[in-house]
Length: 257
Image (cartoon, rainbow, N blue to C red; front, side, top):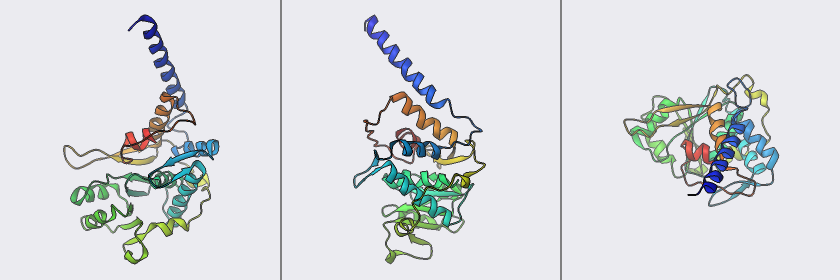
């Protein structure tokens, strides 16, 4: 590699590093600007642009936030608030990020649980999450149901695609519940007093040396993951990111998002 090529490479690296540092500089531990505020800022700036899509549909930023607001207002109607946790066990889909984005709007943390787990390992993750509510989908709910008996507290399971005919006292269809909730952005006062030190997510280790462990992800770390990658890649509104990684882990769920 010649001198000119080396110089071009170094300039490109330095430019990327500068963009990265510029994006993460505003993040301070005592700031009340949270991860959900960053995403709301993107919604306000890029409203009509496509934000997310999966195999079945695509949503603009405005549509994506409207869905997130429904999750937020549904959680609020369940009297969930700051310091509460909801467990999320679901395959990659547009609702996945909308759910935890929405829950964070009302101060609720989300435990992102590996959707491949079953039995004792899944029950362990549900137990240490401290969640009383589990959000899941038509492909994962049976595993959650089977693990329920190994958890030392009563769980309410909310299922996308369940259908009213499959509801029980401990299992409810989530589609109608979310659809009936307001799509209006919740007031920031609902997270008053929160800072970047507060928990946004719990992300679990792989459990290669035992049962999975929950890593606490404060808003500061979530924002750093998301802002750093966006800055380093110099992405523009014309770019599309193809994310094939699971959304329950930090690389796919934060860096990719």
